[in-house]
Amino acid sequence: MASGEGRAAAFVRGVPFAALCGGAIWCVAVDAYLDRHEPPVPVMAALDWSAHHVWTVLALRALPPRLLGDAAAPALATSIALDVDHLPIAAKMLRGQLDLPRPRPHTFLTPLALAAAGRRSRRTRFAAFGIAVHLTRDLFNGPGVDAAWPLRSGHVRLPTAAEAVVLTGLLALARSRSSALAPQG
Image 1: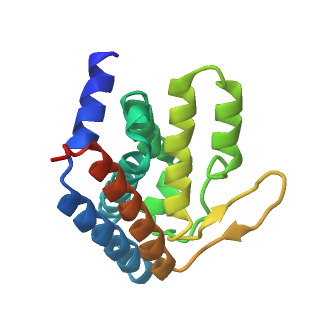
Image 2 (image 1 turned 60 degrees about the vertical axis):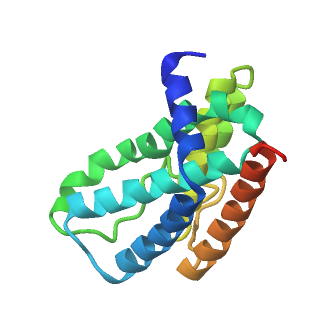
């Protein structure tokens, strides 16, 4: 295991469960805030990326522990890197056009295509996992996700309250995975 992969997995494993709970609350609060306010683009980006990072850490902790070593680095990287597709519309966003649709790679076909292309590479499959986590969070904010583009057009947007339910499920899985690793005695 490369040192970067080892550090990423150690970071994810080392996040206390109380911090995961606080992170879940943070994500719902961020999305509720962004639903009602239009902060400057750099503030919005910082809030958005921090919430994507929290979602990814939660999703990684919900995985079986044996997968975490290979999964952490590529999933954490791609869960944020997907937003590079926003750069072409950044100028419009800086001029105050914040209600723009998400760019085309923000579709669930992107991680499916990546996973299929790299079906023999665990790192590539976990990169696809990170993108899927990113898109799952995007279902609860902004315009939602054009989930099946180009096969079918139409944005899916779920209520922020549903995000709390999904994050609670991730927390429950993460807790059970953490309990399985705890020393018995």
